[in-house]
Image (cartoon, rainbow, N blue to C red; front, side, top):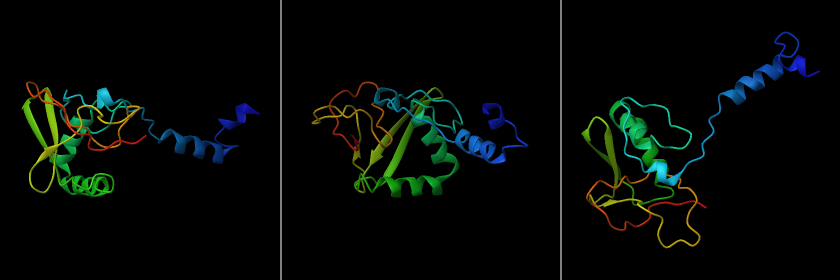
Length: 144
């Protein structure tokens, strides 16, 4: 019986469903890896852990600004202050991402603060803390 699941001629619906499930992406977002600033040029696909989020959003910012605007509008549902995602790319191997409000004030997430227990993962892109700028940053968005 199980052999028929993979028989294209006798069980087309099962194969269609298998292809449909195969197109899904599984993400186990890790807050520490979401904050990574390592860049891969022209990175278009998010890793399962989210470790290349800054790089993917930087590519989206440069190649598809209209889609970036749609992403920001959707993100405003959970973080109303968000007006702009800005980037700094000091070298080809690093991208720093910042959230900005309408008055050009930068904000973001370094660590989830004021939450007990800590947020296990965050919904939106994370602030990548630039070198030499330590200190607490208020949490932008978290989802338990």
